[in-house]
Amino acid sequence: MNKILYSCIAEVKRAIRNPYYVLWSLLIPVCFYIIFTKVFTFNDNAADQALWEAHYLMSMAAFSVMGSSVMTVGIRLVQDKQQGFITFLKVTPLPEYVYIISQMVGQSVIHILSIVVIFFAGALLNDVSLMAMQWVLSGVWILFGSLVFLALGTLVGTMNKVETASGVSNILFLGLALLGGMWMPLNAMPTLLQDIATWLPSYHYANGPWEIIRGNSPAWNNIFMLIVFLCLFMVLSVYIRRKQEGL
Amino acid sequence: MEDTIVYAHKLSKTFKQKEAVRNVSFSIAKGEVVAMLGPNGAGKTTTLSLVLGLLKPTKGKVQVFQQPPQSMHVRERIGVMLQEVRMMDGLKTKEMLQLFRSYYPNPLALSEMIALTGLADADLTKKVEKLSGGQRRRVNFAVCLAGDPDFIVLDEPTAGMDTTSRAKFWKTIHHLAERGKTILFSTHYLQEADDTAKRIILLHQGQKIADRATEEIKHQLSRQYVSFRLNGKLNRAKLDMPDVLAIEEREERIYLETKNTDALISYIMQHFSNAYDLRIDKGSMDDVFETLVQGSREK
Image (tube, rainbow over all chains, first blue to last red):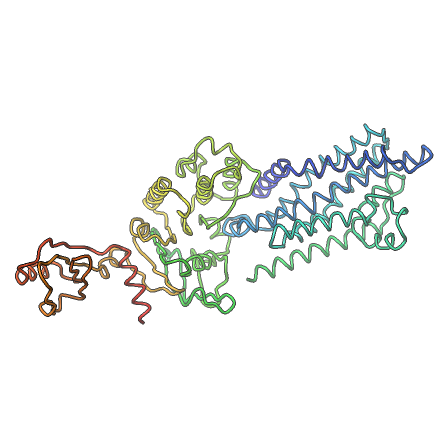
């Protein structure tokens, strides 16, 4: 048990000391938020604008957490593999799966910080006001939903080169964010893209808090699709790892 | 059998048609210090990887502490230093050493890890990725000792170390050997094998070509030479005798290879009145090595 605990603590330290964390997970989402709610405004009446400000805040929180899940975990695992560290772990008493889990847990702890910072930015910059329950539920959804993208991160982590992993995870991350409606509202996009979105995990991920801030509960469909993607990514990741072991 | 630490039986490993290790067997008893010696590409790292369970043998079997090498029991009792491992970034040296200690049931005291590896206080508070190459090797060595291992495996441990660190490192290894640790290390430096190991396993082109006590290998195969200078020309016919194994003339000296230097010297004194500046040269480990490798080629 101690192994897991100490590994998780170490991973939290590593995650927070990562210089890219502050940039990608805090600064960029907050900047986007300012640009799309303060600089460009699409809404004429105040009520719509207030809803948009809350909606886009959730988009950015989901965007931040999804990004650090896919990118940080994936690239770090590949880096550790390339530097011989994963091989070295096999001759220590720390099982590789514990190492991967501690990466996921460490990253999740950091996600709490990301969510809090971005929510605060929304409350301070745009006076976004939600019921306490809505804040908490949205935060919890974003935190636990990120498991899907952490699993996707471990799938990226099976790659052999840092350059490939970083390229692939960038495309995945930005593609998922754009097509899932995190950057601009889905109803502003062509119908074809809207249809594609309903098949993407990013859309189902962000749609949870989008519904919550409107006073609805997330659709079962969203939960179902996230679980399907979680299982898919986990099974693929485990399968590829097993196959690589065989060498 | 209780005291057998490693049991390797007819190990072979083939990578895509290329046979890296062929039919290698050996066992290592508790408390032995064994060097795995061979030129680059001899199969040392592959053999160690098989012993550690990092690779699956194509054929053959290996056990460590009477168990498969991947088992948790083995992983808790061995300490390993592999080539070119970069530890996780973002952690300070001390944090990382503590982290690795937490993985083992009976870890070595942190103070002892630091004392044994000669890490300075300044290195301990630095992040691992900020350390120099030599300091990183020390950190890897400290991590290797984190679990107070009974069996220590080191793959080319001194590669990239300067002379001072190297001397300090081997001093620590001697100290650990005195404490009764079993040690297996690979090297292509003959001197290191000779100075530290009591036994040498010699690998060449994936095969074991010798496995004996270091002294024995040296004694049995060491070449000895009697050499002298001569006023006038050498009459080779006079040297046609069993004690002379080979004759070589270079740099105005005559070198005679022999196993019996004493008898040969007195023979020369008696029969070559024009000989002067007699010398005896004992073969170095490098010569032994050459002989063994050549011997295996001729087979």
